[in-house]
Image 1: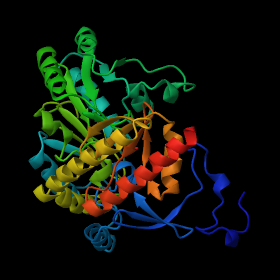
Image 2 (image 1 turned 30 degrees about the horizontal axis):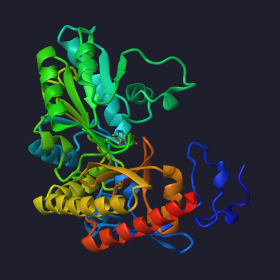
Image 3 (image 1 turned 180 degrees about the vertical axis):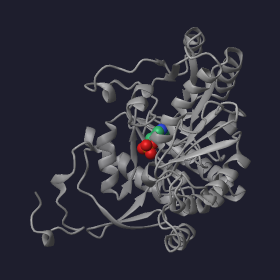
Length: 406
Ligand SMILES: *Cc1c(COP(=O)(O)O)cnc(C)c1O
């Protein structure tokens, strides 16, 4: 039960009523602008998390604020039993710029993944091979938190205690092409991967491996499915990360930066791969609502501009150079730089969680990641001056981390 309503405000919330599935610091924010976040206690932070690659255009981008406000005055929600013209516009843009023929909109990445997994099985069932149910994924993968998504991800920590594992998921060592070739067989429905792993610690598949996996799928009739929820939407300096390898999937999941901070996800597919998804096979109450579509379209127009993507590539070059210098000066702190574009991972020698706290003491926000990494996921619009500030704060953090081990 809560106390008197008047004692609970945004500055004094009843924190204890939140289910304890996150290990949170006490920090809370009340306002954001570009790459800056302002905490409820009045401190300014430099944001290199961007809502875990969600706020691709930074906080309170004027075009997104306007799109949201304009739509809010017109129409928020109608059922998907009617046509939603805004969906057709955004789907058209996504298909224009990618391999896809059709799109289904969701409210989150996990829901897009859920549909991708369903569509893969349904594809084979519709083609007379219902025994093809296995989805092959890779160690370090993260595909979301629904039952299907945690089974696909294969992370023991997310599966423990939730009952028996679902059949039909095969998790292989990262980048082990021999194991992959051996695993693909008569019951394989699809190979599912993040071209650049996010939560796994900013780990990219090589272009050669992605091409070889595409060929393996073509040879065996398995579908190739990419999860570009984190690495897509301009994050690597191309609209989608798979463009670097020149490889097109059959199905792709997108979310996070798609809405620039408004919840929206999408499952993209070729007509062929979506052949089983006929009326009645899937649906969503909120997916693709007019508010999400208005913001999504405004975000897509900004992110897909050639100059935005060029800027990301330039900033990635700047960070790459500066971080290399930092690693040279602090080989006792930074062991490896990885990732692609502005999905940057620093594999650390000291504990990554401790390092994140020390960065926060410098008013710099960074994300964690697998294999003792921290991730830098700045807004795509970060300037060189702001990036220089990030590097200075990281240097101070490295100094603090070094001092802490003495
Ligand atoms: C965040 C993420 C998801 C899950 O998205 P939600 O919106 O949290 O459901 C799935 N896959 C990848 C690669 C992600 O980074």
